[in-house]
Length: 352
Image (cartoon, rainbow, N blue to C red):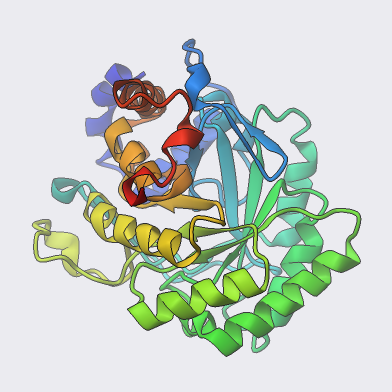
């Protein structure tokens, strides 16, 4: 599949990035993309939050915003899929153009702004997903026009408590005004209280609750967020979202566009933040590492830094779905090389 993708990439890159994405979703919905035949190495299996993961490589939020192709992406070889970000009410997001490929930097800048069909439509799509070969999480956010963030996140929690294998509170996107301010200790604590109260109403459904954080945090920010996460007994942290920083190494002419930067330039800063959260939580809380992963060695670096699971998205834009099988194969080779029988045994190895 990677070879086929390389053949059609010159045509795809002529399309607007959102048009290319819609074409990919169309093909996946109609099962026009053949699934791989390779089986996952046994060393990649693990169990977290009472969920079974055939492998630790997941699809990050942003690709399947409306839960249209979660099953198809699991069939492509992902160990888990995260849909969203989903807002309670439908909203179009920010004006177009709002997605920009930085091909020379293997990066993407987006300022989508939580474009979403809304919770009701996404819930219907998830109910249709009767066969799941891996966990499907839901990433929830607030409507841009909402003055009550806690109410919006609580609404999202209620909508998906019985449908999601895990839930993610996304307060780290740079494309909704004021959203990242919700990472402050008092605001975050109050918001999580509202979400956890909503989940309690949905009992006995009790999906693991995770928090997705930004890479652009000070050391004090990270300490405060880690303390709140531990105090609220969260199931985990996802590190990280896209960055508003623009590394001086960027060479593409689109590097000055506003929005969140993802892809290769995000790998090192996001991995540093991941390692910081592993230390701050003393390795007691499962972490998901995301940002710039395009190889098995990079996935392995995230795991050694403290990630129990790893997500990717931008690499799909440049390498196509064949990258999933390659990353898993290379990751298994890294584990064998260093004498780890399972991926779980390698988690946090750099801290030992």
